[in-house]
View 1 (cartoon, rainbow, N blue to C red):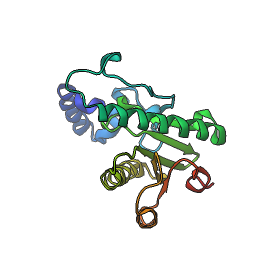
View 2 (cartoon, rainbow, N blue to C red):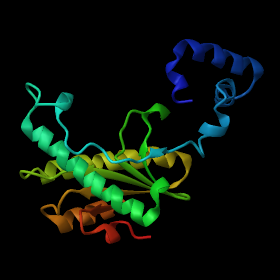
View 3 (cartoon, one colour):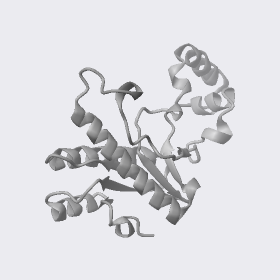
Length: 199
């Protein structure tokens, strides 16, 4: 239904048909697009099985592109290395199929780094790399992203939690752990996996 919303020419006629037949717009849309079983609000697919991401990133697959800051490449590599290490650990603890990444084809354009799905419990995992004293900016950015993603996934009534996963222990760690905890988000970094993902 989310994807179909962008087909504006189709939507107008479907909405008119729904009003004519005195049925809900949602029911008409999912019936017309044969999406009911797969995309009901309560059980739409969360994403696709997570795979390792490229951890030796260079723009265009080769030398550093003109104008691309080396620091950006370094940060991307660190982010992806951190995410891959966490993915390996999560798979070993929870199984391959429970660890996912968001499938952008499903609708809203946000890239959740990792999702951990256990029955009715969903854990949103946002990964951030820390380097050159950027702790404060990354923590603020990551906390905002995680809260946004959690709010979106709560719309279908599931039990949603968050983990903000860092490449290393941040400055002012105790304060940020307390702040994240007040939002039902665990703050973690390599070596704290068992604490961050308590069952």
